[in-house]
Image (cartoon, rainbow, N blue to C red; front, side, top):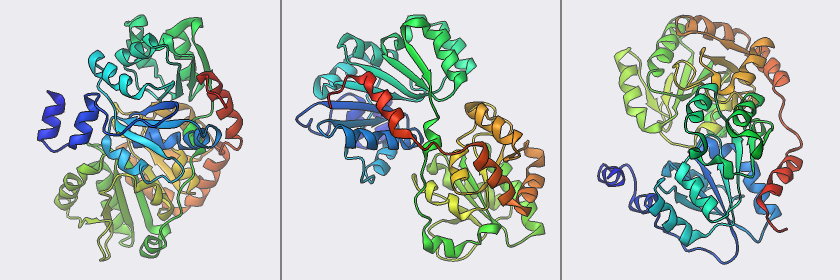
Length: 392
């Protein structure tokens, strides 16, 4: 019923609907196949270097990539270094999973970040398909909730869990006991590389006057817009780019902006302006380089936990975040201690923006020192793939 409703509302395509029900819309190639699953584009992008490693190191294997959000697959299809079969993820129902696995018959499975699907893991265990968790994250709250389910979550089948922080690793150990190998590794988001900034966009925006609101969620946009409007009264040359986590919210954000007396424009609009809204998934990585200051979304609402600081760090953009950053608690603690970011509640956001714009390089340089980029990923990748039983 959920798939039918999504299809009738135009939320998913016919192919995505079939995929969600376990029906393949691509042929299985000859040779062994590795199944990689990520929730959406952000999680998938984080492990792109690892996927590239698999392609280079195991050329006889094919990659099958699934996500819950079919729109993310449209972006992944444009990654020239990752020739993969792309499908929407099957629902966590036994009949659907058996149909999916009968067709694809993967020899290994890689689960990205926090995706926990008990029936999926049970189906993998029943077929003795090796599985690992990669860049895995488990908060204290989630660990307590999952502990009530015990073995029903199915993670005991996994050969290894590679956690993105020591806190997450401790939570997985407490949840799974000694039978599953759990190891903290550098957060894969710390290995991010950004695409070159579009020179046409670079000419349109004055970097030292541009603020990027990255990966915002519903409820945050009004807060960010109000702070920007207050700053713009003092400095009319300021510009804000809002990139919502879910671009389909762009029209709602525009309505909020208009009600505040602002004049929002699409990023594709040719005319000048001082407020732009991103309407396309996958465009955000190209925008960090345009902004002297980045407000990291997901941090002004208590139930989200904040998003990655690594991308603005790589773009030498000063970071402003709200107080809710438990998804990256270790990173933001290090940044705050090094004066590499500004943590602010919404009522002081405008003042924090003004402070960051005075000397954004100060915060950017301190952030780069506090969270340096990982420089030897290939050794880590080799250790991870050793748990999948692949043949060279």
